[in-house]
Structures are given as C-alpha cells and as structure tokens.
Length: 254
Image (cartoon, rainbow, N blue to C red):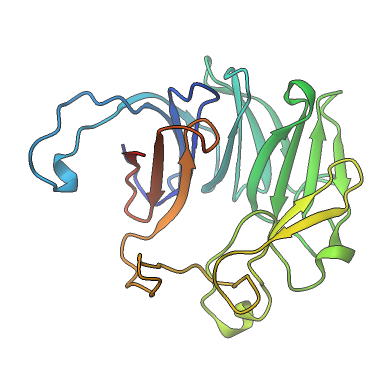
C-alpha cells in the first residue's frame, strides 16, 4: 500500500478496524483494505510482500495531509494538514461535508498537525497546529452548528512548547531551541493542561527531535524513516501499520 510521496498519517477505521486510511505528501487520502490481494512469496524482500486493496481515494487538500481521525460510526472521518484547516469527510460519497478554519477569523493560521473526535456521538472535533502567536494553537469545533471554540492555551504552552500531540523534525539550531517535543493532555471543557506525558529518552523525559532507535537503545542511521503508526482497535488489536518517507504503508501482525 503506497502513495506518491512520504506518508504522514495512518489510522484504522473504528472497531473492528477492517480498513486503513493513509494521508500523504501528495495531498491525497487513501482508504485500503489491508487484506492482501496476492499471496506472500518466500522472499523477505519488501517488494515481494502481498499487496492490500485500494478502496477509495479522497482528494480535496491543496497541501500535504498531516493528520487523520475516524468517527466511531465509520461513516465520516476528519483530516488536516498544510491547508491550515480541518476537513470533515463523508466516507461513502468521498466528498467533504464541512471545512473548519483555513486562516479565517476562527481558524488556524498555520499548518494543522493533528485532529481527533471527542464528546458524545463524536460531536466535537479538536485540532492542534503551529499557530502559537495568537494564543490559539489548540481549537475545538462543536457539532451544534459546528461553531468554532478556541481553547486559549498560550499562557500554558509558553514560547517553547509549540506542538500539541505531535512532534516535528528539528534540523536547525534556532528551531531546536524553540520546541521541546512534549506530549500534552488537555481538558476540553476548561482548556487547561491536564498532564504531560514523558517519552523514554532525553534527560528530562522529552526531546525536540525525532530519533531512530534500535532494540539496543542506540541511534540508528535514518533511512526510510517511519513517521506514523497506528494499532488496530486503539492499541488492543492484533495488527498495526506504519508509514514514512518511503511512501509505503506496511502492515504487521502483532
């Protein structure tokens, strides 16, 4: 299963996780059935692995797709990316039913890195992006007219913690000093910080750059970097998939 550029986002459909959605640098979202259409050969070469089935392609983004979320009903999903907007899709018709943001008065002013459904009946969409200058890098969109509710978190985030629920590639010294690579949990009702999740490296439990780490804990050369991963059934399934700079999504049995 692949695309015409690096894969930035992967997610399974809601339980039982029959399908996989991918979002790529080629601005396209693809829906796959990971059950192979071919049989595996004895070779371990990646080119010989059985291929999944492309069910549908979704095209509306003008920039790279960076985040995906599927509603529990499996009838809709949300996507986000370089457009500075959140797109709400109808799965069956492959069209966008709503768009939120896009640089307007109540939207993100920079790229949107992540999106998630929340609330009863998936009545809320929460998104996180890079627009920290106006104090609204985290936003929520509510089903009651899907009005835009800004969560003002700049006073908590400060000038360094730029990212909400995502990391980013740090290459320059200036960028390295501005991001801390934390994972933050927020209370949707109050907009207040509920907790910080440490990662298993870095002297303080966080680090501002992505790393390729082997089983021995040592850094590895970065070829075909894996940039996204998803478990079936929210981490309790028997299967997971990964995508990255190679443009290929690979499915593994746990």
